[in-house]
Amino acid sequence: MKSSRTNITLSSPVTMAMILADGNPGALTMLLTYAGSTDPMDAMMTMLHMDDLNMRGDQIWSAFKFADRSTEKMVELMQKRDPEMIEAVNRECAHGPGERVFSGASFKRR
Image 1: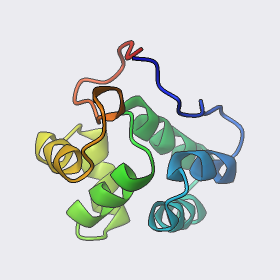
Image 2: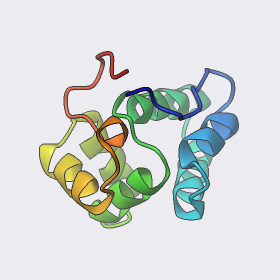
Image 3: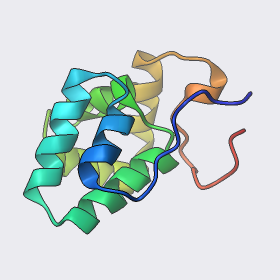
Image 4: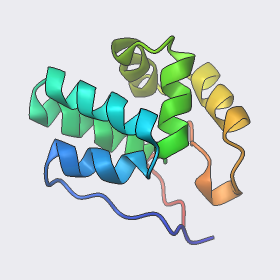
């Protein structure tokens, strides 16, 4: 199944955050707060991790809530591909199969 999501590019943390937030104001706030608190390249690499996991909008917000609304904890869990976080996000954000968060990532999803 082909995804209708906008592809992200390495442009700027703000542009990447807007694409990844996918219209979710909580996700956008979290991403912009994180981008403003760290090195821009680190922020973009973290956002690429999110994209690699197929995380957008409500999935990012769900992961943030799972991490007790701690940006640092969420980034750590996401980078570790934490199976409990991924399961919780997929349970809360039940989209079609092409829109789920993947534990292995880095593979062709389309």
